[in-house]
Length: 62
Image (cartoon, rainbow, N blue to C red; front, side, top):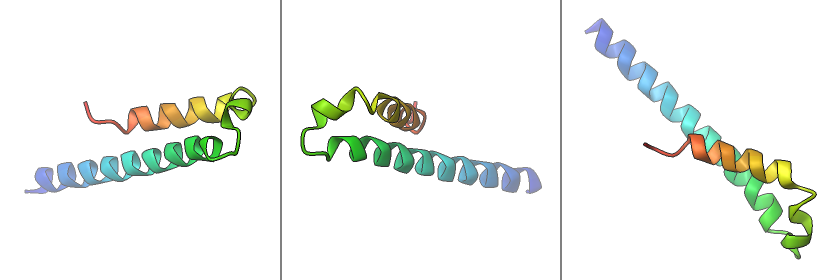
């Protein structure tokens, strides 16, 4: 029973990490896409977009 509990806790922690990564990535991407002329701001904010996409990518299920 103890091994099952450790597994369940680990799965829960990984779920929360994936959820937090998705929320952070989505926030970064949306901050660029919600600008008035976002295509003009896309290149200067490219690291924000790349980081947001990476965070959303690791949150995707396999």
